[in-house]
Amino acid sequence: MGEITFMKGNEALAEAAIRSGLQGYFGYPITPQSEVIEYLAQQKPKHNYVLIQAESELAAVNMLYGAAGAGGRVMTTTSSPGFSLMQEGISYIACTELPCVLVNVVRGGPGLGTIQPSQGDYFQATRGGGHGDYYTPVLGPNSVQEMVDHVYLAFELADKYLTPVVILSDGAIGQMMEKVILPEPIQYKPNKPWATTGKTVDRERKILTSLFIQSEVMEKRNLKLQEKYKKIKENEVRFEEYQIDDAEIIVVAYGLCSRISKKVVEFGREAGIKMGLFRPITLWPFPLKQLEEIASKDRVKFFISIEMNAGQMVEDVKLAVLGKKPVYFYGRLGGIVPTPEETFNAIKEKLN
Amino acid sequence: MLLEMIFAGFGGQGVLSMGTLLAYAAMKEGKEISWMPSYGPEMRGGTANCIVNISDQMISSPIVSKYDVAVALNQPSLKKFEPRVKKGGILIWESSTIKEPPTRTDINVYAIPAIEKAINELKNIKVMNMLLLGALVKINKIVKIESLLLALKETLPERHHHLIPLNKKAIEMGMKLV
Image (tube, rainbow over all chains, first blue to last red; front, side, top):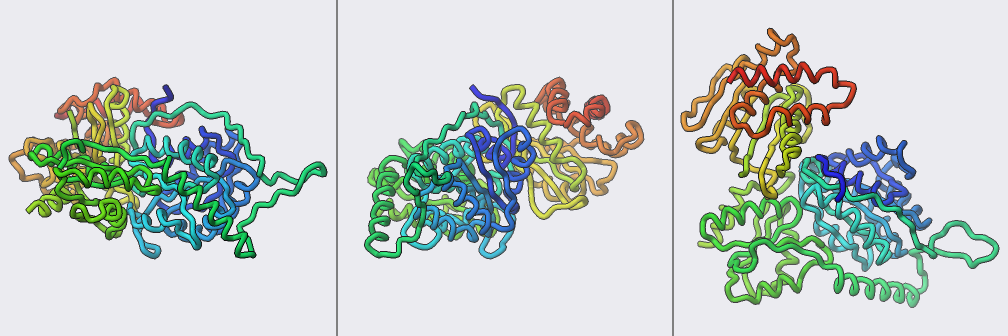
């Protein structure tokens, strides 16, 4: 049993990074995630990690690339506009097959947008985001506790599959405080024989690159990546179900919206409406099979995706449900968080 | 048991601290808690609020729009949150500066002149939030006073620990004002 404390999501995430053996952090402050770099800077004298406030997100992601190549357990955090700036680097890191963790504490967009919470970056995060055929595992924490647990998980997945892993949080989860149990620190012992740590006379050169100028070689790398993505899809789907067993209406939501939706399900049950919540924890790979199975049940009337965007995850829900049942959407935009009451009313409207 | 509360006032009045302290004290008593601030381009003198939920079970939504308890430290907050108190709920308002009192009769309303008492009797306006917190704890007994004092000790940085006796006094004075 770890230490029980009361922390902000962003600070808890930073503490979790330290405890999971962080060796390098490169970032650029942006609301609503600046507490991460602040916390890491405060704690730095007690620990042995490298911490650099880069001159921009572009620089930060390329520092991350370099440090991951040198074999470090490394991370960056940012919020939406900064995450866009990092896309080129993420594509390079994915192609080079290097493990690292990127956290996007999403705020309302597009453009410079607002600093309030949003889920507007779902498409960008779950479809690779940068150029070329790649994906990154994407985790969607819905509590301060998961801001901690997902850091551990993200580093594990990154090392296991040699891939950048994205934690897709949002401004509210980053800013709110909850009770959190901090796990014991890990003594991180990397096993990365591929790392470029400086060539000695007695061994071959190691080359890490995303440049494969011959198409045949590039295709080979692509096929290798696709093979890896297939394995991730088979093994790493995570989700949570709440009151699904007899549910006729399936609410699908992730992150903060899943918390709101849980309350909506409680409202529904009090009113005698059989509602249940399906929460994808991995947004990529998306729990397609699990949702399809639920869609095949006769009792299920419809699905409704609740999001803080104009309807992004709802497309994945439709891909899973494959037309077997109607799939609806309710969401708020631009940094507005839907209230449990308005969400419940939106669902009731679909019943009529 | 689930208690959904909002603390609202001007930035700088200590509404976020009140919520933090109460949530921390409840956590120490083994409760589940959530604390959700209104964060944004706020400044001293702007508006600020935080939603604090305390429960025996895992808390579903940290953001709610109807409250069992509202504590309003200024006129805009009272205006905004009085209608959102659940029927039979509790509304505590700072009665020495708010000019237009609440009007609802289906909720329990408590007027606490916290600012006046803090200035005149404790000679420190900053602890007026603790007076209101003391009043709240007296009314709904959500946490023990010992837990609040423990929370003060554990959440305040050590350099402010000399202020704990004053905060304690303010909490106790708030309890008497109910």
